[in-house]
Image 1 (spheres, rainbow, N blue to C red):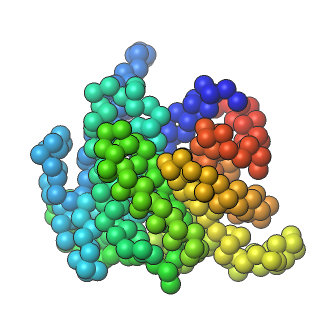
Image 2 (cartoon, one colour; image 1 turned 30 degrees about the vertical axis):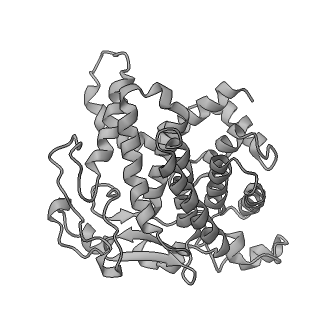
Length: 355
């Protein structure tokens, strides 16, 4: 497949993943009855400004949206850790770790592939990415533990407040070796690994820190497989469940597993969030320039094929905080790895797709 086609698919994926946050910023520029030439530099600037509006923690002097002030300065205190920083999710004041980590991965990927086209916005892109990764480093400061959420979503969603004024509980939630969360830990590892590539030339020491932590977090995600939707339950579901992962029809699939000849596999393995484990392994493979993670990629891709036979893994064309299939295919193509295992079908379907 031509490199230009792969890069086009990548650009399209990143555009779709960013569409929700871009739409509100770009809508006012439309003028009824007249088509204007697109102003990509202005669109990029506004996209990055959006992230500044979502910042949690102690804001820097470089903050351009001056109506935002410090907030969430006690996050993590209930668990004895510093979880200040990161991004609020949307219009609420919860920091949901699963989509937050995905934000970091996509920001990093944008920088890795398109930094040469970002012009004067590149420093702002690096700053937006570092705001994620600094927080993720705090959330992963011990082996076999990842803090995945700050804030009680029920009380928060019942009280419409500015983050500067919030007085709802700032409960901290974690996954660990007894309460695993492979999907969120795998995504966190991907974000840290991808960011290490993005910072490699500008801050190699920081890149080394990110890569080392990514390896540690991935080892945890892979060794202790399970869903954070099961481990944490109602505090993350129905807000950010991994709908293609472990919790889907968990008990009802037992007979299907046996009928399809997958009885040698545990349900948690078969129905697990393999797309995030492949995603994390692929980014580590690329960041470390090592084939040590190839076996994890191949194993995960085989598991995804089995999941699709059970219809529990969504669609190949999806790319979002919850489903990494399309992103995995594009990333693996860029790395020239595992051309089998469904990638050709994805290429064919993408070429034939008409928006």
